[in-house]
Every structure is written in C-alpha cells, then in structure tokens.
Length: 110
Ligand code: 2BA
Image 1 (cartoon, helix red, strand yellow):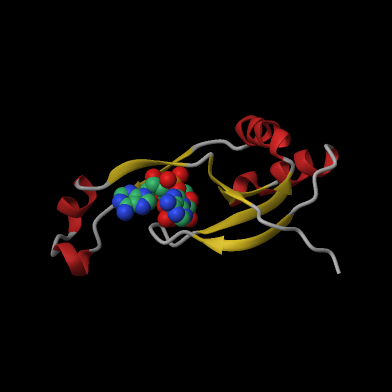
Image 2 (cartoon, rainbow, N blue to C red):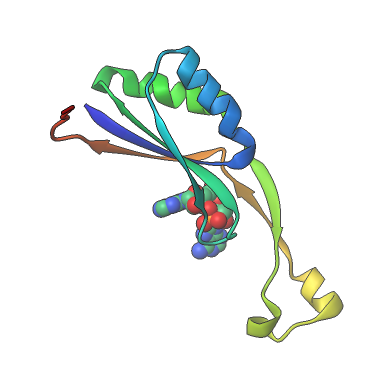
C-alpha cells in the first residue's frame, strides 16, 4: 500500500476532492501554506493499494490546473524600490500539484 500526499492550490481543491470522492477514494485533506509564496494551499492524503496509484495520479493530472504568479524581490532584502522593483518581478508556474508517494508499512484500524 502507498500513501499519496498531494499539495495543490486552493483553486483546485473542490474539483480534486469531488473527483476522488465520486471514484470512491477515501481521503483526508488539510489546509496548508507554501513556504515560498506563503499562500494557502491544500494537502490531500490518500492511502491506496499499489495498483491504484497511477489512477490517483491521472485524476490529479486531469483536475489540477497550473497557474502563474508574479513574484518580486522583497524591498527590505533587495534594497530596490519603485520601477526597479517592478521590473525585477518574475513570473513563476505554480502547480497543478506536487505529489509524494510513500510506502506504507502497516495500516491499523482500531
Ligand atoms: P510554495 O512553496 O509557496 O511555492 C510556490 C511556487 O514557487 C512553486 O510551485 C515554485 O514554482 C516556486 N518556488 C518554490 N520554492 C522556490 C524557491 N526556493 N525558489 C524559487 N521558486 C520557488 P510548485 O513547485 O508547483 O509548488 C507548489 C507548492 O507545493 C509549494 O508552495 C509548496 O507548498 C509545495 N511543494 C513544492 N515542492 C515541495 C517540496 N519539495 N517539499 C514540500 N512541499 C513542496
């Protein structure tokens, strides 16, 4: 069995949850926050049989959209301001989702 952890942006949360629930996957999710952008995102946790992992990843690919965010240097760190600061902003791609797949040693329901 595997534990699949999926981190995705809040825009994808509802669709991803509905897609999993409608396909009878059990899940736990919690609100989380990315360390770089400091924005709210969601982490989903699913314990699944090994042969279901690919299907879970397919659902993530179908459901989670990539978005673009502008990020600029922080004035206090860069010493830049005004136009110079705006000019040095860059576009980054966020998501669709970051997935981690871990081996599960044992599952207990007590
Ligand atoms: P954040 O940490 O807020 O990162 C948002 C986006 O910023 C990332 O998108 C990436 O494009 C960029 N980014 C992150 N760290 C960076 C850095 N040190 N320098 C330059 N750009 C950076 P994604 O890669 O799609 O990640 C989306 C969210 O997934 C992340 O939000 C974080 O919450 C999580 N995540 C991504 N990789 C992770 C990892 N290796 N371990 C734990 N969480 C991760």
